[in-house]
Image (cartoon, rainbow, N blue to C red; front, top):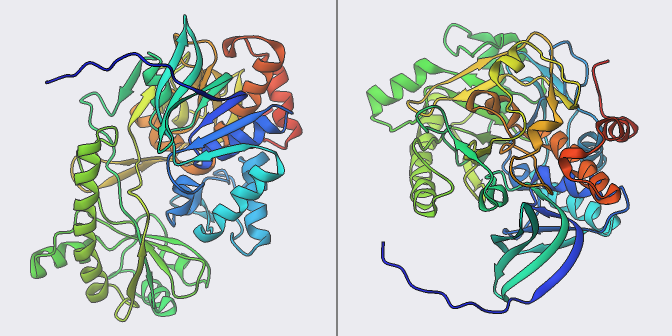
Length: 456
């Protein structure tokens, strides 16, 4: 590869802070909130022009409830939903046979609630800036380098939380990382879009009345008879027929429809770009274009084969392709599928989760789900990377295997990890200790005070 030499230069320090959050998605929002709750000076940086990340993609929040119907994710993630609900922007948590539980949210209100939280807690937010490198002093990350239209600048911080989803900070700091399965294959992403003008009453009725024709995965068809929000996954035969008779290029083997907050609204989750690597801008760019083209055939399929969609139209596509997997750190402990399926408990638990191992196959168009019998713990050590002393990693890039991350990647679980990371960073800053030496009993006590659920 051809290279050039970049001359050394002085980089201005934009600011110094106690705790820096890199990434303003669901994990980062909650991490910043949790850290600011402890009286620390907190800054959050985000490359996009809005807060919320995947919260704005039309996806439901899966996993607030456990397999036994009890609520396992509470604390600040629940308080975020409560604030949305107060504005008419969220539903109750509904048990679901396939996804354990569903909570629908209005993507348009996510930004308002997020900004309210930032302002109320005096969190310094800086958007339209790209994290580009770390400032290292031995094994300590002293700060980060950002690039923007203002040029290249530095931000110094006592503690840093990587909420990028891609382990960008950890990777640049030299933390060992993995990608995908044993062959490096990652779960494929999807570009969702929103349809309006859907006759949802007709859709629900047809699905409920004709299980032999419109078969759903795992969920009994009667589940759809109620006038309530749901996620429908199924209609495999219709997908096959549309491919064979109409030559439609449908990349998935199942129809995936998510009801929206509006009565005639449905979010469609059916594009799939196998082989996309979202840490490679060329791959990400080409993948997003391909997903847009896939969605054209998906719309044709829905209007012809799915009852209630005959007169529907595309209202909008999401602002970016939703990424399921990129880098994952190798931390002090790496969670495994066995930990999840055996409902493992940990002494250093910082969250409880119950979502299934929801694995979108890296090759082909199918997906498989495996459930634990109840719920499982997430240990603090999975947020603690190797080789550095003042960096925590929360969200889907925490220390999990490919299979375990297929469960922990959903937003409520990532938000729960963000809350723990925010509070742990505050403890480390206050006590003057490395994140590896944070008092776990103190952290768990703080989380309990916030309402976080633990298995006793």
